[in-house]
Every structure is written in structure tokens, then in C-alpha cells.
Amino acid sequence: METFDFSGWATRNNLRCSDGRTIMKDAFKDNDGQTVPLVWGHNHDDPNRVLGHALLENREEGVYARCKFNDTENGRTAKMLVQHGDVNALSIYANQLKQNMSNVLHGNIREVSLVLSGANPGAFIDSVIKHGEESDEEALIYTGEEISLYHADETKEKENPPMTNTNTNKPESEETVADVFETLSEKQKKVVYALIGQALEDGVEDDNDEGEEEMKHNVFDQDDVYEDVLSHSAQEDIIGMAKSSRVGSFQSALQIYADENNIQHDALSSGFAQTGEGNVTMLFPEYKEVRPGAPELIANDQGWVSVVMNKVHKSPISRIRTSQVDIRNIEELRAQGYTKGKKKQQTGNFTLVRRTTDPQTVYVKSALHRDDIIDITDFDYVQYLYNIDRMQLNEELATAIMLGDGRDDAAEGKIAPEHIRPIWLDDDLYTLHVDLDLEAARTELQGTNTGASFGDNYVTAEAMINTVLYSREKFKGSGTPDLFITPHMLNVMLLARDMNGRRIYSSKAELASALNVGAIYTAEQFEGKTRKTTVEGVEKTKKLVCIITNLADYSLGATKGGEITHFTQFDIDFNQQKSLLETRCSGALTRVYSAIAIEEDTTAAQG
Image (cartoon, rainbow, N blue to C red; front, side, top):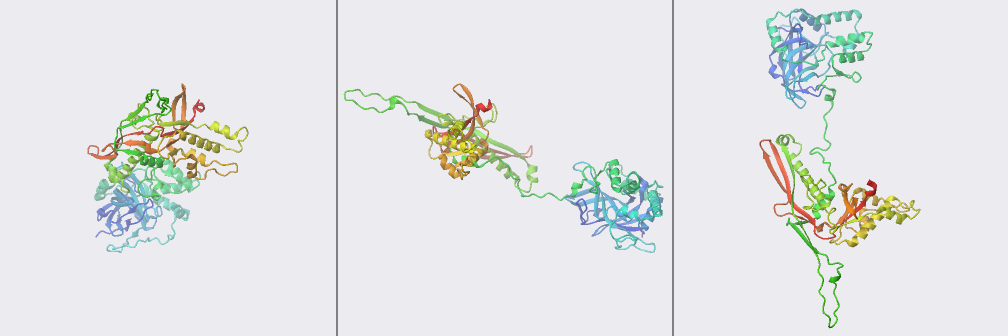
């Protein structure tokens, strides 16, 4: 039976490494019984660094390695270092790593290496390399466990050798290489320098043919790429640099070595991080969702949209026609008194006003990749996108009803105003357009020198109330209308104060009563809306302030099948789930003078 010089743990199961990964049980079970090269410091570019071989055994706790040195000069030197306790730790190089989240489930151990004691205390995975987005990973894995020696008088292998070091002089507390090194005398330091230097020099080639075969196929395969590896042998270079007069500190030596070898290093916070993916941020805990499930939507004000869609009159007829006859102020239509013997006069004629509105199709179309539908498991992705599409369709219809589409006339997707007629832009026969004259109100309230008593908010509020109430005199809509206004203008009126600093209107309900409207709804989409109009041959710019109407006077018509309908279809060519929300409808005010648009003339300000 083959005898071994020492043994130790190559990997340990369920030990969380410093980069957050955990080696799982049986991750390297395929290596059970295999023999792999024993090398120094994972130096892959020199075959003379092979010190012997290691027999791997997969156990419940991890992978145990029984190691034997070869009879080369480097092998004999390394054996002496191990026997004297100067080197007492192992690490492995593995590739074909397979992971599930942070758990390493499978890998292939390619070599076992001797490393300096204390260089990587505790579990550690170093030099992770990815050769492409979908490729396997390679890594150097350290466990921090100390090795055990086999004594010459032992005749058979121990079943479970103790995991202790024969060097009884080592302190129990963990120390860095620099700390231990400084405890040596100058004579001892010279011996260590000579031993380490001899181990690192080029040695005689191994005469073991079997070992050469292992090296050829398992360690020095030229197809493998190793980059950005921080070798443990470099620790001696760093220590030597730190002792030189030109550097003067271990921290400075770390920084210099990092700069010369293209390694990212933060000497102030300690620790190395390779360029690429091996960054210290990998040690941070995973982000946790504050509100698990579907992402929270950030959308425009939807309150007034629901009001509009609920309050408009729903008609089963999509082709709308309205007919009105204006008989006001027609002298010929007046009834007349009869004088005996006189001929009775014929009543005068009147004019019929008629308007027709045809429907237009309005739709929202989207496509979802099936891969995304399957991969997103935290919430129902299909339903989430449908809700967004429905919200967008409702907002578009409500905006077209109140304000108009807003896109250029030549835009392909424009909702035509002759199909869904906007209240704000409708003809003066249906919508009264009234100017808000703030200057006239300020002059009336403040007089010559009362500006200190009446602030701008109070002036604006009073001007609004006067304008709305006076315009209501011509209003011919049904019932009590509602007021749709910008949030800013509502706040201006609510913040109006009297001469004693008390607010004039304490709530929206009190302000609605003063304006003689049923309810007040804010619509941030009204902000900054302007239109061009011509008054007595002069082009004017009017800024929308609010709209007053009873939406029961607005008819939104759709025949059966033209109401909002949801269609879905799967495209096998592009692996997409396609969705279509569609309606075909028309819309228009059906009563004359049934809406009031309060506007501010901004022509002078723009000029």
C-alpha cells in the first residue's frame, strides 16, 4: 500500500466562503479516488513546480487529500518545509464549476497546491474567471484548514487523521505572514529566504513518467487560460518590498504590487479584488425588494380619468347626430295680438342646427416575449402589462374627450377631433369660452393703494369665482356641472386669506359651493395647455384654466362589438404573446352651451 507524506482537507462542505459562495456536499464527488498533481503556489506555466501527487477521497465533510512528494529537488525542499511547519495549508484549482445562486453544486478538481499558512485564513475562493457569458467558471479555492503529517513508522493510512499541525510553536491567534516573519531572528530569516527561493527556482524535471502524463493532461493544458491570479508566492515579494527603504510600509508595498500586476487593490480598506467580475461588491448582501411582487407604477393623475369614463353618457349608437333650433331673440316668432278686421300675420322662419359624428378605432397594442413570461415568477407579468394597457387606453380616451388628442394633424395615430370631439376645443355653440381677467379683478379689489390687504391668491380666487358665476348665466347644460381644474389653480384658491390672515375657503367642498358646482376634480394633464384662436382678426393664445360641464351631456357611442375588447394571439415565429385592446367609438357634446372653458389670455406675456 502506498505511503503518504502528509494529508489535509482540499475542500470543506457547507462552509461559506468570503465571496458569499458555499461548497455543497458532493460537489466534487466525481474526483473520488482520482490522483491529481501536487504543485506549488498554483504556478501553471512551469512543469518543474510539480512537487508530487495527491489522492482525493470524497467524504461527508468534503474532499480529503493524501499527498506524497516526488524525489525531485523541489519535492524534497517542499517536504522539508512541510515537516518543519513552514507551509501547512492546501488549496485546489477547479474548473467546470456549476452554481445555483451562491451554491457551488459541481466541479472538477484539476490540481492540489501547497500555499503559505495564514495567507488566506478561513474559506476563500480566489481568481474566478469567466470565458464568456454562458461558459463554466474556474477558481482557486482555499479552506484555511491545516494539514497533518504522516510519520515514518506508520504502516497504514489513518482513517481520519487529526487536522492539526505538528508545529506546536504556532500561536493560537491568527497572524499575518508579515507578523510571523517579524518574530524570526535575522539568521532564521536568511534560512527562510534561502528555502523559499530554492523552492521557487527552476528544478530538475520529474523522472516519474506517470507524473509527467498527469501534468500533460491535467495541469498544463494549453487550452486553459489563467489570468489575474494573485499567487501566494507573491507574498514574499511584497514583504521584501515592504522592508526596503524606498517603500517603508506593508500597505505601500501592496499598492505598488497591485499597480505593477494590473490588480485592483484598496490598501486602505484591505483586501484584493481582481479586475473584471472579482470585485469586493460581490461580498455585499443581496438586495431585498421593499414591496415584493409587481413593480409600483408611476403614472399621471388617474382620478379625473375614472370620473370622466364613468360619468359620460354611454350610447349603443356610434354614429351620433344632434339637432337643435335656436328660437331665442327672433322677433318674427313672437306671438301677436289680433285686431278685428285685420289679417293675421304669418310666423317667421327659424334655422335648424344639425351635427353628425362618426366613430374611430382607438387601440393599444403590445407584445410580450414568452421567455420573459416564463422567467418572471414574482408576479403575473401578462396581467401586469394588460392593466397598464387598459390604464393607457382609458387615459387617452378621457384626454381626447376633455382636451383633444394633442398630436399634430398629420400624425398617423392621431384621434381625429371630428370623431371624438374635445370639450375644450368644441364650437362656441356647445362650449362657452370665457376669459379670466385677473387685472380687472385686481383693479376692482385693490383700488389705488390696497395691495397690502389683498394678496395675489385672494385676487385670483375672487376673479375665478366671479368669472365662473357670471358665465353660468349662459350655461344651458343639464343638472349641476362639475369643475375640472389644474392642481395649482385649486391650491391658489384654497390658500386665499382675508385681511386677518384667515383662509377664505377651508375645504374643497366650501369652495365648490362658492363656485356653484357639484364637485371639483384636479387634472394635472390640464397644466400648460394652450390653444390658438382669432379674435377680431388678431391671433390670440389662450391658456386653459378649468372646464365646467355635466358629463351626462357628453355622449360616448359604440355599437355592439365596438366597446373595449381584448384580443390575444401567440406568434410562433417570434415566440411572442401579442395583446390588443381596441374600441371603436364616437364622442360629442349633445347639448348646446353645455360646457364652459375658463381661459387666461397669455398673448401679451408670450409676445
